[in-house]
Each structure stands twice: as structure tokens, then as C-alpha cells.
Length: 351
Image 1 (cartoon, rainbow, N blue to C red):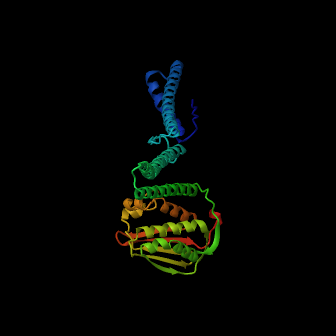
Image 2 (cartoon, rainbow, N blue to C red):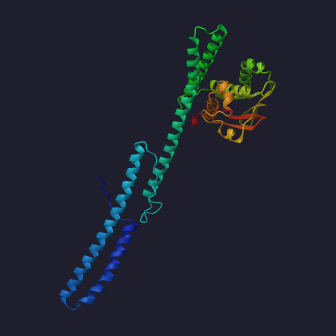
Image 3 (cartoon, rainbow, N blue to C red):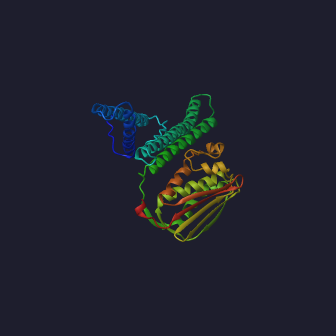
């Protein structure tokens, strides 16, 4: 049971003024029916006025209490729904006697805001579970199907090797999805160790390009490289993951005989890395969603190449951990450019 304590507010002052006005009005009315020279008449006037005033006060208090009780019942009901996992809450109570800047109105606004944010988080959670289930189900289905096919005693040696290769590929894809999920979860929960050190950014990119050499040589891709000497303070292992993911994507989606350009430079207190390609490019809608978890701009290509749609989400999170930013420019059918800007030094107070 809720005990509501009435305080002297603007509403209370208004009630007192009303009572005074009633006294002024009531006495002339009662004087009309009784002889004011009579003692008994005067007493009757006073009693009648008192009863009228008591009635008015009682009605006003009852109305105020009823209105406040309804308001608090609505608030408690909304909080109860949120606590039970139902975020379809929207308090629209507008009390005339409560100013817009009163704490109770601010409380109502905060409850509506929390409910809206929780509803959005729940939607994201459901989408995440759905995407994870879909991504895991696809390689599992392939593994199950080809493992079953291997049981056929009439399968040829050539088909057997092909089935085993597919099973191996899908297993690697499943493992990569798991690794990326764990990495992204670790980054978003801020449990990932962050160990910034000073190192040469240009040399790190050189090593990544050399590590990817078999992939870009296989597609006869021309690597156009221009590295300035740049030293940054950053987590070396995390930034290596950034360059592997971006350059790997560029190799995947660049046509055979295409070109990938990588530029490293510094301006003021920032390091700038630009990675461009002459690949398939992105539409405006794809550019806006490219960093979303599980989003695949070209689903037919990413499935065949083992993409999970998590790589660029990881990239964005790592860059943000370094207080940098990443942007993308692209034209469909012409190519894509990723631009990463990092501070040369890390402010440890922001970690």
C-alpha cells in the first residue's frame, strides 16, 4: 500500500485561495436567509459556512488523492512490466496540476526512455541469436550431408576426396565463426586486454601484405603500395587483426587482375591508413550497414568464400578502442576504399 504525503506546493496554495474565496461567497448567501442581528442566526451562518467549506475541502482532497493514486498505479504497473521483460510501455499521463518540470514528470519521461532502449536491445538480441543460428546451421548442414554421403560404399575415390575437402572447409568456417563471435563478445564486454606499445605502423602493414601474398598472387592482383614512416602507440596484435580483415576483404572482392592500393601517412597527431581496391563496390545501403554484425553485402560471394559477416564489426570495435575512426567510400562496380584514422599516442585516461 502506498502512502502519499501531501506537501505544501503550488497546488496547495491554490486550494487555500479557493477556501478563502468560498468564505467570502458563503457568508453573504447565508446572511440572505437568516437575520444577522440574531445570535442564533449568526451561529447558523457560521455552522453552514463551516459545513460548506468542509465539503469543498473533502471533495478537493479526494480528487487530488484519486488522481495521484492513479498516476502512481500507472508508474508501478509500467515498472512491473519492464521487470517482467515486457518493454511495450509508454506512459502518457499528463497531470494538469503537476508542472512539466516537476520530478514526477521527469520520472515518467525516464521510464519511457528506458522502455524504448530496452525494447531496442531486445530486438538486437533476437536478431543476433537468429543470425548466429543461421550462420552455424549452414556449415553444419553441409558437414552432415557430405559425411552421410561418405557412408555410401559405391562412392568413388575422387568424390570421397572432394567430400572430405568440403567437410574440412566447412569445419574451418564453423571454427572461424566461433572465434569471431568470441573475439567480438570479448571486445564488446571490454574484457579484451588492451596493451598499447610504440611500433612502426608501416612495417606492420608490410608484413601483413607479405603474409597475404599467396592470395593476391593467385588472383594476379597488383599491389600498389606507398608507405611513409609512421610510429604509433597502439595494441599491436589487435591492429594486426584490423589490417588482415580489411586487406583480406579487398582480395576476396577484387576481380582477377585488379589492383589494391595501400597508403600509410601521418597528419598532425594522427596516422592515416587508406586501403582501396577495384573490386565489386558497394551500394549506398550497403555502405550504411557494412559494419553491422552478420551483414553481408554480397551474400552469394561471402557464402562461397566462407565469410561470416563479423570481420568488419570486429574492425570497427578495435579502431574505436584506439579512439580512432573508420570510414568507407565506394561505388558499385568500381571499387571500395577504407580509411582508418588513429591517434599517434593513446590517452590511457580514456581506457
